[in-house]
Length: 306
Ligand code: PGA
View 1 (cartoon, rainbow, N blue to C red):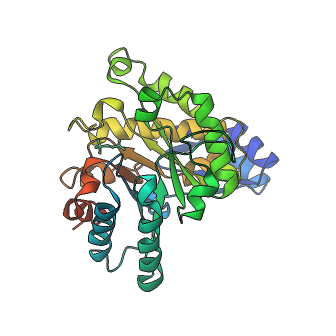
View 2: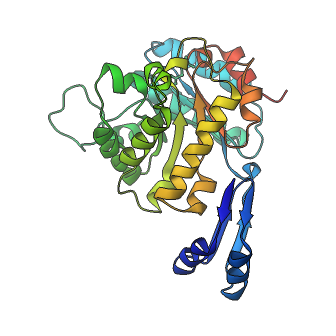
């Protein structure tokens, strides 16, 4: 449980005179008195207020015609969405333009929050980087989001925290929302290093972002051992890490940022397990791989409470 003490009041005094709290907290009597004296507002931020994001990462699947068919299948099943729910489709680059057109039309016609995103990008603006894609190129195809630092990029393509940090900064500076992935391998978890690893990924991946830039970031916790394996983290395991991530964000930034940042879970999310995950207080959505390739299954995930 978090404790708000006199030091928190002093730091709020230097900033915006507000403290945002999330979940259960204890406010020490000294802090209560100081907050009153200095007119510091203590605001309780509930999960209900955060955006809920259901994102589909199609990975290297679907040629153009198949992508269009899949996007149509999903869009056809969404007549309306709860207010704070956002759906994001991340097809391969080659289908991004076509999928973006479909989601943009659905946004206009149905007033639903559905967007497209890319699965990766490079941090340079342009030049001799054969095979790479820039933030501007994603934007010009209609993409609004970009997944950065997916464990498959880290592992297969040797992406480092430093490279990820450069990509995150560029993405945000161009106006994209960065879905920044973090998560430990099975070996790291078995050696009780999961919190250490995720802390490092967050600290280095979000290095030197200012308070405005961090509002353009969504975190996705994806334990590597749960990706594509059919082995989902239990809601309890995921919640523990999400709570830890929110705490790290509080330490790197502040309580307002920590209470507002959406933290998604990813790793073998299916229609059959999403409800339990979404019931946890720090899980604000999901990043779905395999199950986002089937319209019926993905629609059940989008409308998980039914
Ligand atoms: P999965 O993939 O749902 O197929 O496990 C998730 C991801 O890698 O984003």
